[in-house]
Every structure is written in structure tokens, then in C-alpha cells.
Image (cartoon, rainbow, N blue to C red; front, side, top):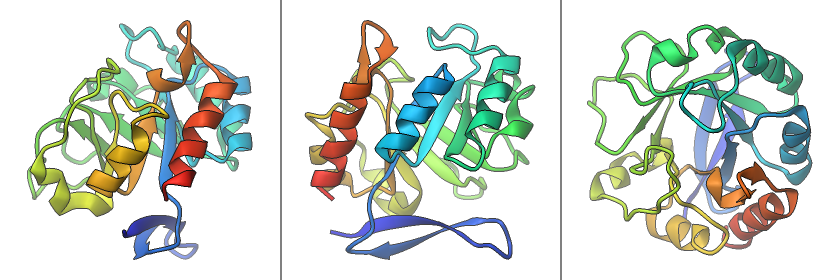
Length: 204
């Protein structure tokens, strides 16, 4: 089974992928709200963290807090600012490596489109987060169109330590993204974060 590596080009500053049989699965944990949680993600070997600036989310961080967390994470781990529309993330976006939204928006740098539909082929995106649950954590089956974009697909929505390996083997995506699957009583749990990434590593 092919895996996709996530590497940085030092000359251009852009991020590149390549396919091998040895590289590990890109793994992101979303909905972090504290520096301690960022430290936990770094310690456990996650590749990226997501900070939510959508006001109706129970994991909402005000823009000033989000910027503080992004600055804290800089040089330690990649950061995604997460919202529904660009207006949700606009104030914090310059501090983050990637902008993850559900809105189809042209001319947004470092755009990560979260969607349950196949993106238009002319839309320029760095990655596509397939999340049919819209962040609700309800697991869903996966459509066939994502097979054509595996090198850009990050699977999200209802992933847990118990189903992530099956999803990886079925979809063979670039990466996986977890949020509610590593929470206890609505709070990110270090033990559950470790169990999830251990499950990812064990099947890749």
C-alpha cells in the first residue's frame, strides 16, 4: 500500500508530497484550545494541529487566542486555522500555515478545502479534507471520487482508534484528521491521543 510523505522544499518554502512504501501517514489533531494540548501533540508525534475560529463550535478559540496558539506552535508543528467560511478565519489566518474552510473560495493562499463533494478541478487547493460530518464526529462511508485525489486527501469525521486503520487501508489517503475521537468529556485526552496515533502508526 502506498503512503504519502509530507516534506518541505527549503528553497521555495512550499510543501511537497511523494509516494513510498515506508513513509508514515500524515496525522492531524483538530480542535485544540491550549498550549498544553499543542505540547502533547508534538510529544506524541502528530504532524499538525487545527485551531477552530468558528464561533458556534464548542472548540472555538477567539482570533487573538488562536494567533497566540499559532505563534506558540511555530517551529514545532504545522498549524491549520479552521472555520466554515473565510470570514471565520480571516483575522487569524496570517499566523497559520494553512487555512481550512468549507467555503469554496478562490485566491486564498494555502487553502485546505473541507468538503463532502468532489472539488472543481480548476480550484487550487493544497489539500482536501473529506469530512461529510461537518465536524460533528459522526463516521461516514467514503465516496469513490476521493480515489482520484489521494495525494491531497485528508480524511476526517468520526475517526477513532478503532476505525482509523480500516479507513487508511480502504482509502489510502495522504493523511487523517481526528478531533472528537480523542476527547473525553469534550476535552482532548492525552491517553486517547496516544492511542489514536499508535493505531495509525501500527497500520502504516
